[in-house]
Image (tube, rainbow, N blue to C red; front, side):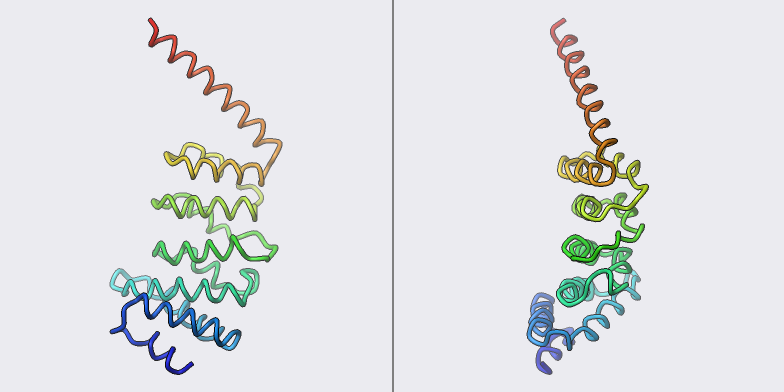
Length: 193
C-alpha cells in the first residue's frame, strides 16, 4: 500500500497513473482507505482557486468514485460538497455516486444549480439523479430543461418530470405534443403556399 500511496502523491507521475494507483489502493485495501480518500476529496474541494492543478481534480474525482464503493451518499457529506466543485470531472463523479448509491435520501438542492451548468453532460447527469431521487417541489425547474438545445438533456428531463410528478408530467407532455403537431401543420401549410 505504501508504494501505491507514493505514486499517488508523486506530482511528477502522469495523472492517469496516479488515478490508477489511487483506484488500485482503494480496491486492494478496502475500508481502510476511507480516510485517505476523504482527505483527497476534502483537499480538492477546499482548493477551488483557478491556480489549482487539474491533476488534483482528476484525483478527487477518482477518490469520489472509490469512496462510493464503501460509503453511501447518505453517509458522507463529501458527496454533496463535491457537487459545488468547479471541475466537471469532480461534479460528474459526485453525480455518478448519487445516481448509483442505494441510499434513500433526496440529493441536496445544490443539484438543481447543476441544471444551469454549461456542460451538457453535467446537466444530463443531474437530471438522471433527479429521476432516481426526486426533490419535492423541483418540477417547474426540471420542466424548463425541456427547452435545452440537447436532445439527451430533454430525454433526461422527461424522466425526471415523470419521477417528480407523474400526472402533471403526462399532462404537460401531452400538451407539448399537441402544440408540436399544430406547429408542424402550420409550418407545412406555409411552405406549400
